[in-house]
Image (cartoon, rainbow, N blue to C red; front, side, top):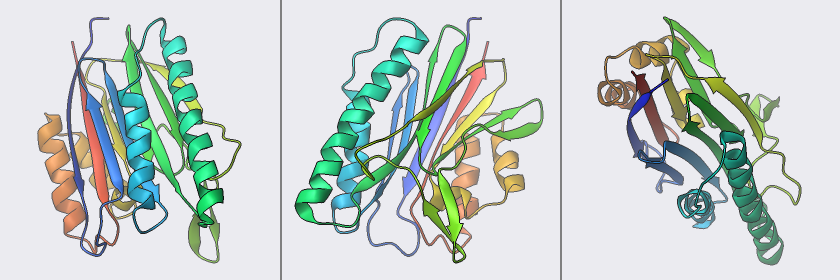
Amino acid sequence: MGAHFHSAHFTHVGKVRAKNEDAVLSLGPENIWVIADGMGGYEYGEIASRMVIEAIQHQIFSGSLEERVAMIKDALYRVNHHLSQEKTLSQSAVIGSTVCLLIAFQGHIACLWAGDSRCYLYRRNRLYQVSRDHSQRLNGRSVLTRAIGMGSKLNIEHCILAVQNDDTFLLTTDGLHNALTAKTIQASMSSDSPIKGSEKLKTKALQTEASDNLSAIMIKVTP
């Protein structure tokens, strides 16, 4: 299938946070899109999410989709090792980042993730959550169980899908998807262009309390 991918993205500090610890990467020619949500306060979260982005940005990809997935995992495992060591040296409670990314190759797309940043798929008028949050509810709060930098051992999940014409994918950090209903997300993803869709998402999110950073990448597939 000769699929073409069109994307649009945004990242916004939101209404409450003093700093934006989210980071996004959109590499159209390589068909790679990455979203990361840093944790750690001060500058640590910002540094962690940027390290995730740069690890993918500087990777040279070759081979099959499965081989490219393995290259991404190796790059992220190196970041995890570095951040885990940094956390020990600084005695900080957390220095880390979630990650959710897509890489497309030869009619298929792979989704990789660690943490609660999400990937959605809008296909044939239905919304699917492709990724599965690595988090659990504790005392009424959502607590991460997995992320880059949280520990010396890390398992990055991934899945591979066959791409269909008119598919729309969405990567979001938790600040965005926690602020919006699934109905609102689906309505935005049904827009006829990723630019219009991402603008709708941003506008709707900023109409809420927007207590966290807001970031998204929307990708549409055309013949």
